[in-house]
Length: 267
Image 1 (cartoon, rainbow, N blue to C red):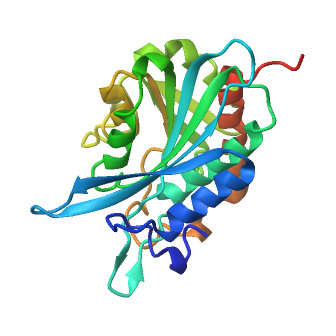
Image 2: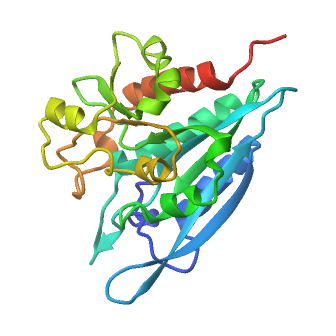
């Protein structure tokens, strides 16, 4: 759905809420989450204002004693269209959005000792504007961790790379047990070390996606992604390039990690 012609590459900047935001809103609401749009403005080009629309959904803590919240983010915007062609953005970042929706649906029926806030951000491609706007509305003292999902369609290496702030070490210890030998998660606390491992000297992984906005306001983060993709920001980032069974496994593993941090044992 998100990569279809009807969604036209999920470009950002219009004053009206687009089809992609409406679709995500509906999916959250149908799952039973309290959901709302968060609209904002940002500068694009010379003096021109653009408009963005985050979709925010919340699962409340539902036990007597609650711990700090989790914020799970995934940007839904992509490059839009150029002339008669559009950029599908299957891996970047429809993959992260559908995993986030899947995790939200799974967690609805559980006992949760944290509030879990899901945010599908807009205008990430223009400069992380949606994430910066949303992060500025949070009280960092009330948020334990941001989990940012961006490009999760694993390739033949069957690996996810996780960049985590050092302040998140208490939480990231739960990542490895949540994964298995089929799909591995390699955790880094240094963006430079991650860049050397991926042979991407020109990429600053700290600033590469929405987790940077949370880092800027003092919230620990863990960013999940596959690293580089040969189809990134091309017309070939299409639905048929995504291995859906592997993406389902990724969702299972990340859900297990989030559950370890937030889900209470049954009484």
